[in-house]
Image (cartoon, rainbow, N blue to C red):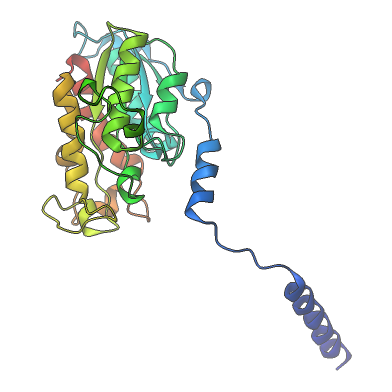
Length: 276
């Protein structure tokens, strides 16, 4: 009986202390973005080098981009540890050093996390630059924009850097100012399965800006078409759908597991070998 009374007393004390603790309010979208912007790329921790034994046997020996340096910019899909499975394939098959500047939560819009614009600004000089589109501009309802944003057609209007397209065009311009001989390649956004628009190219479900995910991806292609930038259409070449998503994605249906990267990695390496 004494033990029972003591237990109730301790329980009451715990409840009393808990009641006195201030309740943590949910973070606002502005606070979330401010935290994401404080994150910085860490390329020294995300540098992959080739296995020379594999590189010597690679079918891509003699390809245009064999033996080059590659810089990668993007959101979490470009930098999560699982993505190293794919990027190590590039390194080994192309005898390449692969340096990742990506940061989780980033988008092309100047307002989206540690934006790809900032990543490109801080990057060094490489032979190849890969702009890997995330889902963040769409899911956070950053304006999509058009291929004309931040181009000669609007006199490089700084205000357009808040759109996805303005961010893409800024990155391309900045890269070619760093290295006019650089190869710039674009990976479209991958599919995500938390909503129909994330994986269905025919979905009419828009985000808060009134645009569908398919429209964001088409806008990515349009920007690259204007500059003649080769595009890897990951959305359509990924080969993942509602029937096999559990094999290749983690539980959030947004991020791929290692098997997902093993599936897409050879496609990426083949594209990077010659830029097509």
